[in-house]
Length: 553
Image 1 (cartoon, rainbow, N blue to C red):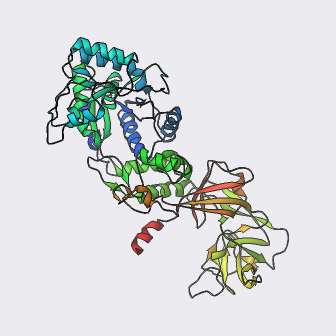
Image 2: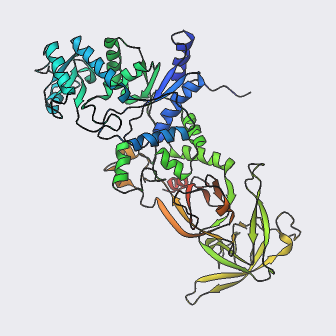
Image 3: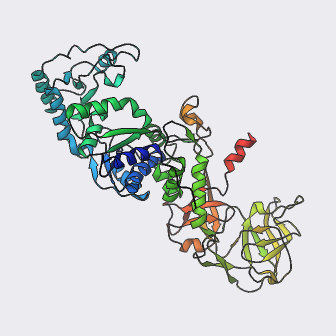
């Protein structure tokens, strides 16, 4: 009997809250800002929030933190919804912080009426100076003691659009000597005359994250508000607002964000890569975005398994991207159909083969008994990989060489008899003999060979473009590497093979197939494919080649 998996610390909190009767059921939320595409770090948060609700019979809201109209867009909203669905999760309610703008404004009025908020005319530089330092208390703003009546009048005038951007802000009145810098009269509203993707020009004042987040949680009766460790200093302010406003007491809990080798997890940096054309858009298969990984051929199952394996911790650490690739390989090995594709073709002519050709059969996936078989056309002229032949071969070379025999996968044994070259000495084709009695599945030849090669029939082959994607960065810990992060980009992260030859089954497959190209790696069909030209992306190599490179170094 397998040992039951231990609970993570958030699950322990949830179980204690449910068993004590504190909550009858739990409500979580995933609250992205729609200012970019989600990345693999968000996948961890999605799996945690939705996973908690699924495990304990609760629900999860998808709430867009859309309080900054300058950087947000409906394109990002739609991409986020697509990513969450693709990962396999369904939200209970789709919410937006902008749904609550009127309520949040009312909360701000309430704080002013309680003498706990004031309108400040100070510049952003002056406010930063007033904050002091972590070891030195701040100083009060000269506008801190405005009357409640004056603050109400000014705040309403801010909403009415009577002031320019930056001319005034609304600040909470807490304690300028508080040891937590976030509690030193934080800004809770700023003026921003900008068109909002949902509310249009209805508002020109917008709440800050710290004012919108906890209150939105409270409005939705979120029981467990789970966020990453950098929000620990914000928790005191989160609790203070809820306490002063006397609203539903949502609680914030923090876990370690995902940091991964050879990867950046900052939306700002990802946006730079897109805008400065280091990659071909947010869904470039080299990006750490969920849409990029989906386009590369990663499966939702593999990403969920990865998130489960890394677990939920209280301390930051650096996760090896090799673990993600391992999870991808493990899943693809079970589901990927096997196909033969030749990247660098060398023609083989079977001099003793008669007739127009024949149809052979091969299993689609040896790991899946229900995957069935496929037809593979065989003919007199074939393509093999150029590097599967050596004219002068060393000992223990088991591929094709003059006088040497190999088996063609799911076909026959062949022997190389003659090497044909052009005027420049370049090998153009091989003349070989095939052994009719050596057909796979009914071999009566008695010949044993150690090498097996993949191949395609030259007459039936389908031309394809193959994109070999690799890691986007050369250094392991990009976040702590010296210099600009873009200095560490791997310039060899994409190799395009424009004239590969594929077996014809690939042209007939459905677009959502995952493939193992025999001896090459795992691949998927790219959205750039057309009926005239198939385009495939390498998802991951068959083995972890980077581990070998690191050992060499």
